[in-house]
Length: 303
Image (cartoon, rainbow, N blue to C red):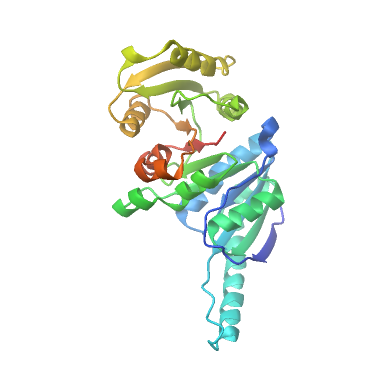
């Protein structure tokens, strides 16, 4: 299949943007976005996205983005910058062509590639708006240093800003074939339960079992409303093999990671919650920490 390669210039705005695509109202996955930097990590995520695209009968939209600092107006070097950009565009086009030859499965699904001169978050925002993106699949490196635990990674930035579901594929996952899917509930009301349908869709696709669980510090203090919430969530997956339970742990992040490992989960689903500015100052994002710490695919979706 011929790849439609497009190049687009956009000035990076230097801030994270909310992705407002709303095409998932009916959970119809037709357009999957995959950020590509031609690393092993991003190629690995692309293979997982292709597998999903085949099952969903969806199109792959690959995006490459690079931010370039523009020189001061007094700086005489515009022609030099233009020359560098032309060379870079040529290299990216060649890299996409090599990618199509390297990952032969790509020819089995409709696909195209866009290249942006912008921040990655801005590129994803633009692509999502223009291409009605329903799902983002992106990779993350297997090893993270301490500074990433503080400021996060590009994947965690997208998790926090995206209004469409995001599946983060760790570099060590070479075959996306989830047989055990965990959904970590924080026992807060889910206003848009339709979002949970994607978990069921993936479970049906791979004949997977679903584990609904919540981390609590004292199970004896669990209210009747909390217990009902867990049962209601599990009821959403009545067509699948599903269980619901609470797990005692002092740390939410540690509890989720330990549960995922002890039950050999192949994928974890979470809902990042939005907090006020002051709450964000004093409360670390559990989803962000999980995205860095865990070594299985993470499905994240806002309400």
